[in-house]
Length: 110
Length: 116
Image 1 (spheres, one colour):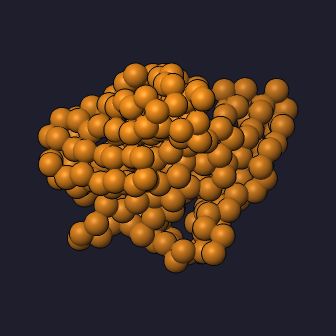
Image 2 (cartoon, helix red, strand yellow; image 1 turned 30 degrees about the vertical axis):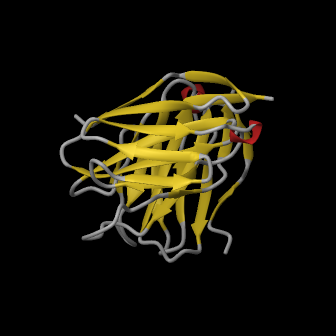
Image 3 (cartoon, rainbow over the protein chains, first blue to last red; image 1 turned 90 degrees about the vertical axis):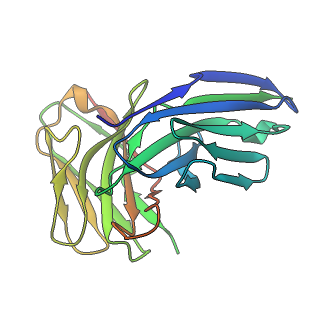
């Protein structure tokens, strides 16, 4: 059964304090791993898609990496506006359905 | 482009009442989805439509029905609302199954539903 586990559930950082969020997955043939950002009261906003182990993608202070078992979302020198819940999802072959993790709630304090 | 739009934004129902949540996308996407999001449970798929004219059950379909009205619109109906259906409902769309590509899903702003 396809499964996604995110850790930690919540993370509090001081502005400028870099850290990483983890997404561990079990899937029968990975077609894509997705990262989303969700602000309170809003829908998830697409950030990245990773397809194969070793792949990396960057956007501003965010960098996503992928191995055969997990993905990391690295946040470098975060700012308060990076505060949000970050969701990870996977898609397996022969389906267009996504399996989501429960998210990591990030709070960045000035 | 508006992307994915949902109506209404908020709704309060009494147990047993019915209602339809509306969703529309202007990205010419083939696939559309309905999710519910509950604290600690993450996003769970209710129903999806891989293309116009087709619908399939997701992880939690009981108590819901859907209609893919055309390529743009996908509605979710609660025939007899129950307190357990209190949740935030999100509609999403994607290009659909492709030989290459990740098939990213794009989400609407959500409908916050309370069933008393």
